[in-house]
Image (tube, rainbow, N blue to C red; front, side, top):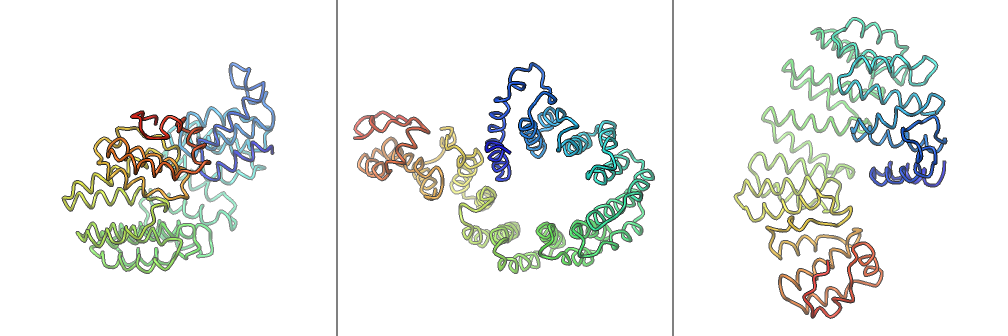
Length: 411
């Protein structure tokens, strides 16, 4: 794997999909067969280009841009080591979009010699279920050789077939077959809880969800389901206690605060909700949701000024301000200079756009507050490397505003 391809995979793993795709396009454009062909033909591409093309398709698949994904993945030839991975993704895409015939054809093309065979058989069963051919689905599922890796998944699917058939007793029988050591145990317990909830067995549903261990991949989802179930059954205090216990778990600390705030807000305890949200750091993952909830709380408190402030911050961050810093001026149209300054003050030195935030504060003092001395003082705090970065990234000309005596707003 070349350096560029390794970099593209690293960007993909870091969820920087746009950057990864840009680098992939660079790799592909270096391939003459890709660059010069009027119609894309995967068979003519180099091994590196094919791997890059596969990664491109995988990224678009995960982003649910199925047209772009299909264009890339359909060109992966059978000789490539990711061929059956590509076929499997294409099968799932056609299934998701309701093209069951195409999905079935692709699933059935995966041979028993492939390590994707059992997953393909599972997919075949799901297609038959979607077509209301439940008996064929059961036949396919029962023909799959069960092992430690796929037992829980397949058993869960069999249970779902019986759910579709209205046989709740059989459905429960299959859920109960899956042991806690199975990788799919958490998923199965969530399905089981759904059945128990439908049967009005709330305690049974809560018990199933509570049985999911901390190391299970579905643990966090089980917390969400438990909390929702408690709130829906007028047991908000129980939901608050649940998230209070989770606060001791550092991995879920911020999330627990957010859910506690949501529950408190729904019950009308607005200030208590805001107090919980204030404990969540601004650089925490998912902070957009915090801003959105704050705006909602202030609206419910009839404090339109504060609601507008947090709505403003929300829209700025939603526009990926932290990714490129290029803001549409209309975002600030209804914000006061003080609100703007509060936002830019909240940008920490660890942010890649910290110098841009300093620059914006200086310009606000100069243009809107007419405080030239403060503007000059703020501008002078930007070090040489920060100035160079602003000149290169935003083409800001410091020479024209060095004295801040002119009215030039070179932004």
